Image (cartoon, rainbow, N blue to C red; front, side, top):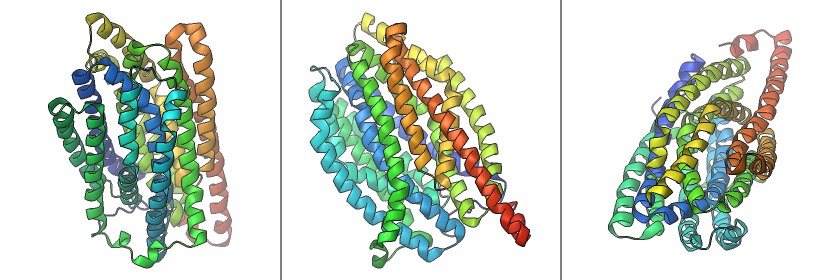
Length: 465
């Protein structure tokens, strides 16, 4: 198609899923590259305390980012469904409403994040020697929420139409720019952790502009002024999709904040090792999030088109792809993990050794259980693509309960390292809900498919196309 959208309702599911996921994966690789380089440059140039300051900021930053991505991903579900159904006017109305509601949400998130930042850092028991750096870093990042919202919405809209190439190109540009600005601000101009935050926001702005340029050339996403005034019904429909996803990410982040509070009590060396591995966490799940984005689009388009059997077929294909991928990534992390963790850390030889040992232990635990995380992303995204964002939110509550419960009890049994297993138990708790919910949902779709078949045979053929 001329607008570079991709129809996911025809063709072999595994080829379509991989075809969309691979560009997203490479885009995520670039995103993780500049996240890693942020950490690497800060750790190497500014030392262990600065690295710990970024670590103490991680979950708060992730929570705000999770709200932003949850809202924009939720909005994109309706866009994918309208595109799959071929309803062009309703598609443009959904896009315009998403733009307006995202702008309002960005302003509110920015205000509340700035107001609550100091109380939250205090609540997390952030060590006093790193508190000023954490505060500076997050003040700047949270001031840039509208930039982050713009990029995530534009990228989500492109993905909803099956265009994974443009977000990949945008993230490649952003990654290169971010690394160059990190070197300039942190290593060259000595602007500290604040310079790293400015570099990140500047790179995000460049990525947003790149995506906007592509959208302006896509007929399917070209909107008029009247599309920016959503009806009450459409606004409620979009928020019914986006709010549970934002809430799900917030709930997960709250569990992470509890863990961060406990970790902060273990001292700067432990925080540094924990932070180094958390920066590699993104690499561990890099393919999982890409498959997840692909499944939201694949399932959403096929649901809109009424191709229910293709949904089941696509999920089966994706399960096999995801498990194989997770095993390969886990093996690579086990082999190269100690070197990667150690590359983030500077200090005395004793500090480096202790922090590296802590980080590699954590990395090993997550790598061994990585297939569980990949199934989590796959089933959660498939449910979301079907328009069910509530049960994935419930799975987030399960993650919160498992993560916080384990974090509060396991260190008493397994000492400090017990905190690492809280993450695994959180994945398992979410999987139990998501997998069960998916098969119940698919069974209901199958019954929906069978009823029309009793009246006319054409839908059965359509579903198996």
